[in-house]
Structures are given as structure tokens and as C-alpha cells.
Image (cartoon, rainbow, N blue to C red; front, side, top):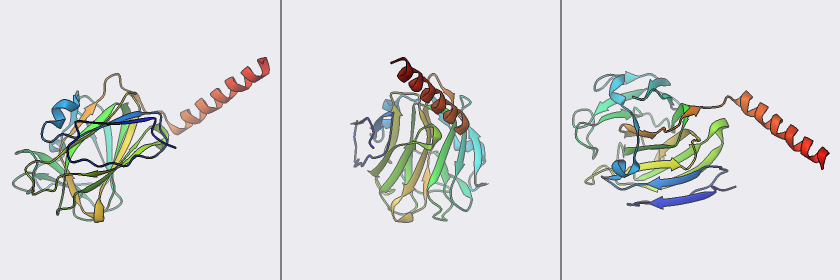
Length: 225
């Protein structure tokens, strides 16, 4: 049970552990502050569409990227909040960042589920305190775990937050979860997505039917042999 191929490029203050069952070829990129540029996203999710600074956001909630990718965001309890850097949030994001905060209720992990399969997702993260351990899990369709990653990221008092990005050689990422060590609450800035050649996430029933079809093909081949 392992990721077929795990690569780390443009690494900056990054430690990782990868485990799980996967067909994806995942690449982790972090290179503050230029990591978002090297990531090469073609779509974004801007939390500013949820409202102004200090807006309480329901849990779960739905939002769309500028390119029309639907996203459901949830956590185990409590509401989210919108915060803006330098007014509602003091940290090391880029000035003027529109942020999504877990709301201080330690209701981890934050789950980001897409209605279309994507190739990559990236963002910057700040803990509410000075926690620097971030745990991220990446999933494919049918909730298949591609990899679990423990990252050491810059704390909020350093000059610039690390950009953390995950990409796949395949169009197969359906969900990620994010949590901070010591159960700390946190905020993230806008999401960068790689959505080239997107396709809808298969429903569980569709996956089951696909499995039955493949089993039938295999049985047919055995009979012919």
C-alpha cells in the first residue's frame, strides 16, 4: 500500500511522510514565496466571494472556482469565518489576502471535496498560534487515499508563509483534508487549482458498476483461455 511515485520539487522547509493506496503520481511543491508561481495553476478559489471580513460561514458550505469547479468545504463542528489579512488576521500571508479560518473551534480536519476531478491544488496556511506541523491527506474518487503528508511549514511570525501544492500526473484528485498538529485552528488563503481536462467525479455506484464490468471482462478472458 503505497503511492506509486512520490517526488518533492522546489522544497523549502518541508518534511514529509507518504502512505496509502494510490494510482496517482503525486508531486509536492513548496517554495515560499514563489511556490504559487511555479505551481502553474489555471484556476482559483477566492474566499472573498463568501463575504467581508468577520463574516460567519456555515459548515458545510459550497463554493465555486472562477473556472466553475464546485467545492464543498466542511469540518467536524462549528462554523468557519472569513478573515482579511491585517484587519481580521495577523500573520504572514501576502498583504490583502482573503482568508478562510476554521473559527477557533479546533474542529479539524478541514475537508475540501471537489465535484470534478482535478490534477492539482495548492495554498498557503497559517496556524492561529505558532504551530508549524501540517497534516494533509489526498484522496481520489471513491475516497481512495493517495497519500498522507506531514509537513513542517513556516510559523506565522516568519517572513512569508510556505506555499504547499499537490499535483498528479493524472486527472484524479477528488478531495484533500488539512489539519494542524496539537489540534490548532488555522486559516488558509485562496486555492490555486490545476484543472486541465477536468472530468466529473464518479459516483460510488458508478465505481461499483465499473468494478463488476472489469470482473466480467476478466472472467470472459479466463473462459477463452
